[in-house]
Image (tube, rainbow, N blue to C red; front, side):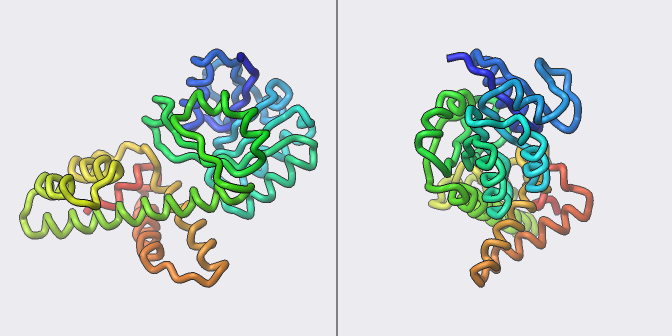
Length: 275
C-alpha cells in the first residue's frame, strides 16, 4: 500500500533508504541539514511530519535526534509513528521516546546493521525495540530497505544491542589491522593472510570486506571512522554505567581517536589499518 513516508537525514544510509522507498511506490518527503536536489525536499522536520504519517530518522547523533523531534513535536499526533534508526545513546533513545509519546504519537527504537551497499540493495537488518502493534504497522515500510526485521525487546534494548554489536565489529577490525601490520613486518604478502583467514574459523563477511580495503588502501566510507568511534564511546558509557571493564574496547577506541585526530574521521573505519 502506498503511504506518505518521511525520512530525516540523507547521509550514506538515509539517502539510499529514501530511494528504496520511492522504488517501492511510496511518496517520500525528506529533510537533511544540507539541502539536496531530490524530490519532496522540505525545509524542516516539522514540515516532514505535516506531510507524512510514518517518519524514519537517520540523523548523525543524539543531539540531532532530540533537536529533530523537538522541531517535529507541534505537528505530531496520534496518527504518527516515529522510528529512530540513528545509533545514539540509550539515554537519548529513552528521551526521544518520551518526547514523541507525549504528543500522542508512537515511537520505535529501530537501529540497523548494514552499511552502504546493504542500504542500496535493500538488505539492512533492523533491530526493533517497542510495541509489536507498531512494528506490524511499520513492517511494509521497513521492508523497502530490509532483508530482516528483528524484534528485540523494549525501547532502549535494541539500541544497547546495536551498540555492543558495533563494539565487536570495531575490535575485530582492530585485530585484523594488527595482524596485517605484523604480517607485513615479516615480509609475508597480505594476500597470504587473506588466504589463511578464509580457511580459518574466525573468518567473517566483515573480515572479507575490511582486510582487502586495508590491503588496497581503499578507505571509501561504508561506515565512517567518526561514526564508529561515536558508537564505541556509547559502548564505553554502557560499560562504565555498570562498572564493567572493557579493555579491548578501550584500546580500539584509543586507536580510532588517534586516527580521528589525524584527520581521517570521514574515511571508512578500516582506516585504522593504515600504517
